[in-house]
Length: 115
Image 1 (cartoon, rainbow, N blue to C red):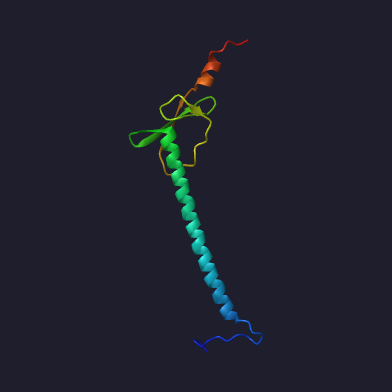
Image 2 (image 1 turned 180 degrees about the vertical axis):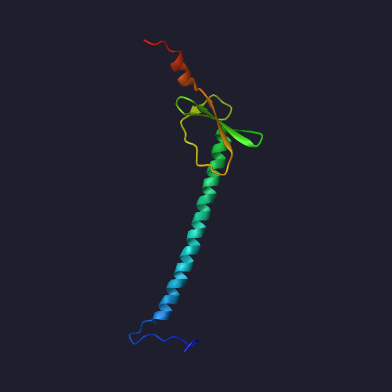
């Protein structure tokens, strides 16, 4: 009979309908937690990308430019003379342009006499 309370089975366990309802409620709670975890991960990726760009990039117009050594792939830190071996984070939604230069280490190797 629809709408009638469901009684435990003869062994004192909840009926199949009650167990199914509990399983559905648990699944809904787990889906909500998974969505929240994905939102947190997305926020962390965005913050990491923003910190990386603030440290290594230069904003010109609507784009961000990052200087990268054409030989060793090191990245220049801001406007300074430090070149670091760091990998850029995945930045699919940001317009990042990589400009190529040469770091002091690679430049010194090019000036060295061959012997």
